[in-house]
Every structure is written in C-alpha cells, then in structure tokens.
Image (cartoon, rainbow, N blue to C red; front, side, top):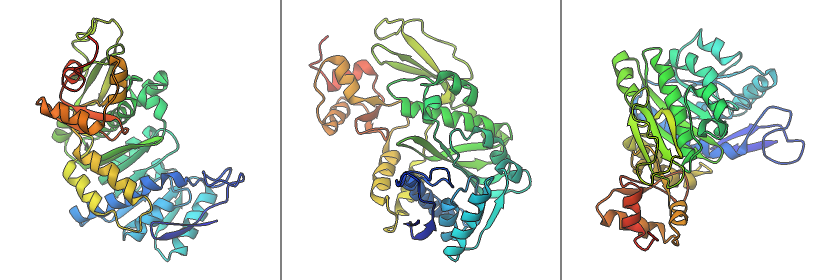
Amino acid sequence: MELSEGGVEIDVEQPRDGTREGSGDGVFFNPTMELNRDITVAVLRAYQEREPRVATYLDGMAASGIRGVRAANEGYDVTCCDTDSEAVALARQNLAHNDLDGAVVERNVNALLHEEMFDIVDLDPFGTPIPFADAAFAQTRNMVCVTATDTAPICGAHLNSGKRKYSAVPRNTDYHPEMGLRTLISALVRTAARYDVAAEPICSHVSRHYARTYLELDHSASRADDLLESLGFVHHCEDCLAREHEFGWYPESVPETCRNCGSNRVVTAGPIWLGGVADSEFTELVRQQLSPELGERKQADKLLATVADELDTPTHYDQHRLCKQWGVPANAMDDFLEDLRAAGYEATPAQYSGTAFKTDADVTEIREAAAPDADN
C-alpha cells in the first residue's frame, strides 16, 4: 500500500484487518503519528536554520523508514536503523522510491551509537525510550528527539512500572499528561548529566497517546549541574486539588496534611522536571516552518501556539474539574482566564486539553477570582 505524507511517497504493508492503524504482523507503520512527524520536520527545519552545521540524523527505530525518508527530504544526511530485516529492506526501498540518499543498517541502535556519533538522534520506540537514552546522550552532538508511548507508567497510572523505568515516583493526578511529560524529561535530563551533558527541552508536546520532547545538548558539566537544579517534587492534595512544589533532589517539607483544606490525602511526585518544557522563541520558529504540504499543519500550528505561550508553572489545572469540585457551572474558558488576569494573576491556556490552563494563582485564589459564586 502506497501512502503520501509530507511530500514523500512511502510503501507500507496493508494491515490484515483492512485498517490503517499500524501494520499487523508486518513492519509497523502508525498513520496517527503524522502530527508527531510533521512537527519533527518543522523542528528539523527550524533547528538547521539556527545551527547550519547540523547535518547528520539518525532514525533509531526506522520501521518503514518514514521519519528517515522525511528527514532526508529536508536535506539531512540520514541513517535509518532497525533490528528487523524486513524493516531494513522496506526503509531502503522507501528512500530509493523517493530518489533520496541515506544509509540503512540492520543493527541495535545502542550498538550503532557505540560506533558512530550523530548531530541529531531520534528515538521513537514502542513504549519507553529509556533503554536507548544512555547511548543517545553519550553519542549525540546537538539534539536528541524522544517519544514515549508508555503513558500509564510515566503519568503514575502504573506506579511501579514508572518507578522502575524512570527512577521517579509519578502520581496519577488530574494533570496526568503533564506529569508524564515532566517525568520523562526528568529521567532524560538525569541520564544526560551522567555523561556531563546538559539536555535542555526546547520544544515538547503531549498528543493523544504519547509525550514528545526535543532536547538541545550542551556538552558542559557545569551546565548539566545547572539543569539538575530544575528537578524537584510536587505535593498534591487529592481532595481540594491544591498543589505546591519544591526544588531539590529529595523533598524536605512533605506535608502530612493539605495546607489548603486539611486533608490527609496528599501525595508527592518526583523527582520530576519543574522547569520550562519548551523555549518559546524556538517554538515560534518551528511554527514558521509548518508549510502547506504538511497534512497536520493546522493542528500542529494550534498546538505549538499554545506551547509557545503557556506559563512555565510546573502543573496545569483543569477548569471543568475545578468547577465540578466547587459546585458551579464552567463558563467560557476565555472569560475564566480573563477573570484571573483582571484579579492580577497570569493565566494562559495549556496544551494538555481544551479545558487546561496555567496560572500563578493557587486553588483558593483561582476560586475567589474566577468562581466567586462557588459554595463556601
């Protein structure tokens, strides 16, 4: 089956059930990840404008080769890597089909990275990327791009799995998509620091069933130390939804009861990343690279506009969840946020859902500013 995506034509195996979701027992291809790949192409364009010497790109889990083919189409010197011989053959075929040069190797990406360095390494595995992170940060010059599809472990729904894989305690809160992204970034930043590498997120998003982050590298031990200062803990009340955070390697002030409502149902998550998940200026540059041939251009632009504008506070709130908690109807989000701003607080939409927002107000202040008629 031949498909067109982002200006290239690729062959994929027809799924046995007749759907377009993946490829059954054959070489995997996921059409629902087109948004992810479109944003990747825009990031690659924007990053090469900023760093013109960047040239080499490794697609660490090539499968059909779609990422590598699209990177090659942007002028990158591409290597596609996969352990599946059928995937290797298909990736090679798809590069040739588009008259594009690129190397295709049948190797474990960790083994390949012990032999070669690349300017950009892209890890898009099925499940957790952690088994590949050490080799990637040790052998990449400029940027590591990472997708994690194991959302249950990173957001705390599968707590023990999250602990094992990410060396952190994620918690399943009402802001679980952001918990997942910050758990992922924390693990990656700590992994990079082991190699005296600072890995700073310059663009990140959570979409559908995955978290995606782009980490720019600085091979500086002192800069790695600086980034580690952005790790910390969130203390979350499961009753009133209040939360507070503290920076550091271990929590020094774990509350036994919620300081807002007195509940003893307070959970602590960490160490997670408490810094910004994106660089606003770079994210705006990425938006400018969303050209018309990208099939998910409109959705990508809307998503990235929100990412670029949202506050860097460590967690977001859900308006509907708060209003339900308070027993009041939810008004229009624009009006809700304007009420917060009128009361002197910063407030922006957040990328995680249509009712997600970020503010520097706490739960009590949000209630007083934007839901004054709530029952007291």
